[in-house]
Amino acid sequence: MTVDELQKTIASLVPQSTVYVLDPMRDGQHLEAIVISPVFEGMMLIKQHQMIMKPLKEVLLHSVHALGLKTFTPAKWQEVKNDYNL
Image (cartoon, rainbow, N blue to C red; front, side, top):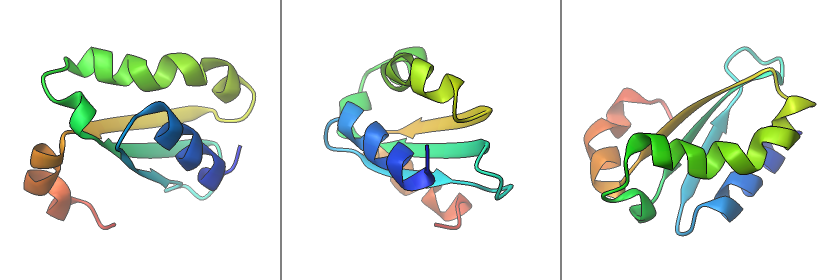
């Protein structure tokens, strides 16, 4: 699965989301995803991550070794976005 494919897949799982998928090691196997959505408002962090990871489980088994995941509400993203070079 390419970075672009993973980005589109995650965006389809989370309504009203902005998704960034990064490949910091440039190996296609150790990816990081940042997902911003108002849907996360009031949702526990574990539920946010489950919303994304459960449907991706089978897909990732055969194509990605590791996926780091960070989820934010739009308000929280405004607070922390300067920490990321996107």
